[in-house]
Image (tube, rainbow, N blue to C red; front, side):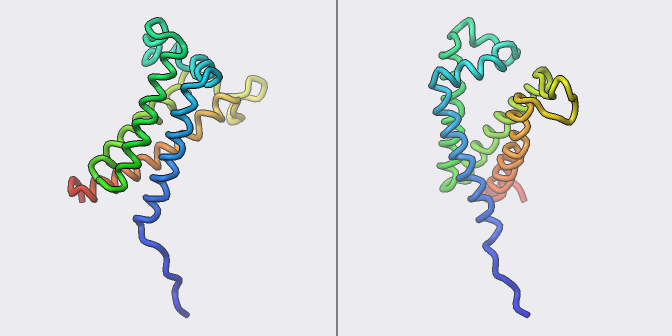
Length: 152
């Protein structure tokens, strides 16, 4: 019986790359809209890493800053298809993004009040998906470091 020929490992990394580029583009662009700025503020304005931005720039200005960072991450991941070092940078930027958003779970009401764990409330459902996005960025960073000759 003959075996099925599958695409190489790199095709999986590229699928992750372009999916993450899409996510960073869509989420980053959304940060420039008022509805998203208000939604982000509910979570981020009391978080020490972001709280300083709100008195300085206001709700929309803080959201715009986050949007620029997300769009820059997406751009680095896209350019990274042609440059392993830029890809590594994009992967690391994405990892930082998702480590930060996952850390919001420490203070956010992530479980349904009436049911408790493991029943996720809206904030928990919104944030927990970032674990797989973090893993995708990690995989891209590892593959990129190898392609750039920085790791084995």
